[in-house]
Image 1 (tube, rainbow, N blue to C red):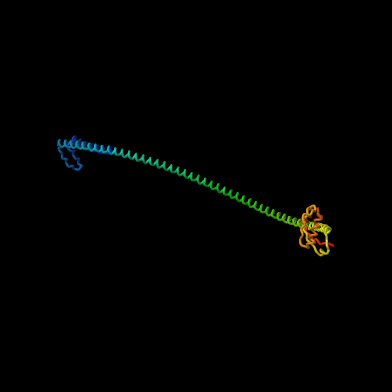
Image 2: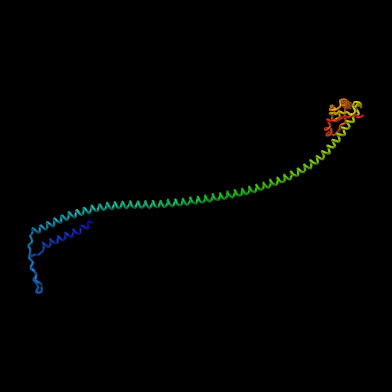
Length: 297
């Protein structure tokens, strides 16, 4: 700025100084050269007389102009200095703004870098989370499949066991049925055999009882005092209780003729002991024996 203002000023001062030197040193009294024949006629130059006061006035004017120019130059220099200061301040402000911009740019880049890192970290975390979820899902699916397979195997084993138990139950039921049938047949056979034996035994007992009943009746007949006139065609039913030895425990008369009944009771008591079987079962059947006494003549 200063160099741009100084150059015109120097040029202006140089022109004024040159003009002043010409006015002071110029020879205005010299005659003009003669014209040559071939030259065009030149009008004569009229000499002008220079007044010293006018020159001083011009010099003063130039000095004043120089002083004004110096003031103007100083003002320009001050303006240039102010402009320089403003420019320095502006440059400082711009530098501060640039530094602030650079700082913000660094902060922005740092923020972008941090954001990228955070984004990358979040992406990595999300990827890891998805991998973990995938692994967890795969593990859960594998566990579910294993559990389902185990349950299916357990169900299959349970079904096989159920069928086996059902078959075993059916087999046992069949065996039990067969055993029951065999037992029934055996029991039936035994029952038939026992019945046959019992019939034979009963027949034997009945025969024995009949035998001893006949013997007892014979003893009573032997001891019976008869009277054909009062007893003929008459009878008496007796009930006799006996001891295992044949001893008569008691005698009770039932339906029949009183005379015959009295005579039959006396005949039993007279006997004291009556013949009895040594077979306990036979004796048990004849412990209390009933018979009908019909007097024989």
